[in-house]
Image (tube, rainbow, N blue to C red; front, side, top):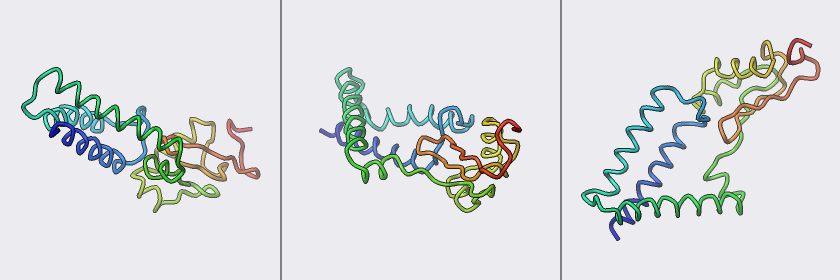
Amino acid sequence: MELLFRATVLYWFVFLVMRGAGKRSLADLSPLDMLMLIVMGDLIQQGVNQDDQSIVGAMTAVSVFLMWTLLGDWVIRKSKRGRRILVGRPVMVVRDGQILTEIVERERMAAEDILAAAREQGFADLSGISVAVLEDDGKLSFVPNPDGPKPGGG
């Protein structure tokens, strides 16, 4: 029973840590982020299993993590409020070609990341963007400004 409790506590602790780290896709992780994830995995294992090195203990811990993951996925699919709590909301980071600095800082992003993503989508600068949204999966979506330069210089 203690193993179930430790696995549950650490699952939700890691969830909160990852939510606090900001929205990033796996492709956007820095070397420091990757290092944190690798080390965190080993530390979590030690905290969950404590002195229990048995196969049953490992299977129990994995089962608890899987159960919470499946339950979370179910809540995300069935409840708008649950989705907002567990996944977050898309956030506008550019409006009318201007970076919304306060929001970008709160999301722990750099303006350079937005500019790079815009260039990848064919925008030379932000003047051609009406709205940019940081999606809940960490990707940036751009809505072109109908009066501004078109993506790709057209």
